[in-house]
Length: 190
Image (tube, rainbow, N blue to C red; front, side, top):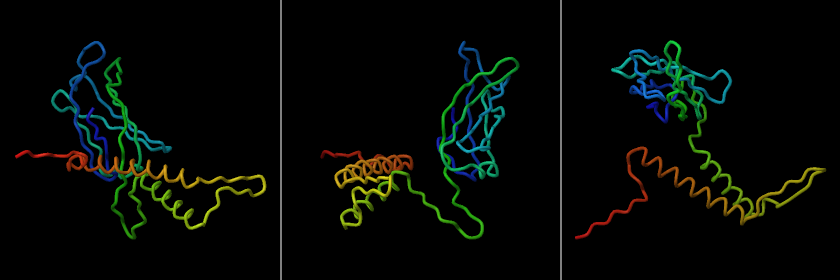
């Protein structure tokens, strides 16, 4: 299945799928089958369906910009279902990431495009600075409630893990943008 792994809300989204076979090896192609993608996310009433049009023996799919502009950012799950009279087969399923549209009308609102790992790393670094400046206690009690905080060693360990996560995300983004793996080392012998 060729649905893009990453989409941008508000974009026109297109892809094509080739003909396939069912579990008995019989052809599933556009001459006798209809292929529909069903997309859903973890928000009530957020869903879309896309019916393929014949393209050779396979299908071509199009989600209009008007439709995708209503997509909430986050993970969307999809299922590709082929149907014909008396038969229904799931030919693929998976997920895709929908990025928010950065366009706006009127006054722009705040936008934070950082990943969750980047946000968490900043929060941990702030907690370390606060702890080092004496602005935090390790544990306190108010009535029946008790709050415990990380100690410095735990925060430093968490910071190291988050830094590694952010580096992996940055390397993956460079590779996705066609800039190669930053971990590759090239050697030339003369």
